[in-house]
Image 1 (cartoon, helix red, strand yellow):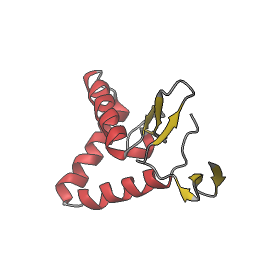
Image 2 (tube, rainbow, N blue to C red):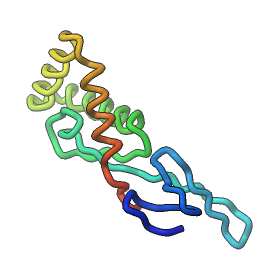
Image 3 (cartoon, rainbow, N blue to C red):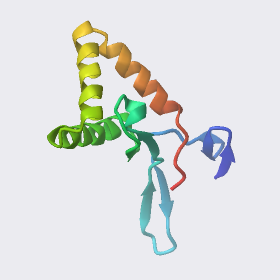
Image 4 (cartoon, rainbow, N blue to C red):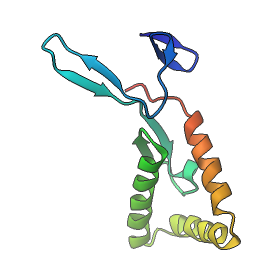
Length: 114
């Protein structure tokens, strides 16, 4: 295992997001390591710096949706405004372009190193 420009390489192959690395301990126990990324509510189109951590876009999107529901329940105006902007995107028929851009942004984020 060695560092590379894109992160970690194993046997000269880059370890990509969504790919687990199996680490075997002397006891024979196997541990799985999944590269994780961090993205903020604001970076996902929200209104705050709340961080979401996950190994896939779907994982952080789920956390973001839960956060959005909590903020809506609290009637947090900045989040309600962000949700209104999202509704505009949905109604315009451009949601797939928006999703593709957010997924590409997430893919380009560095692993968080934890």
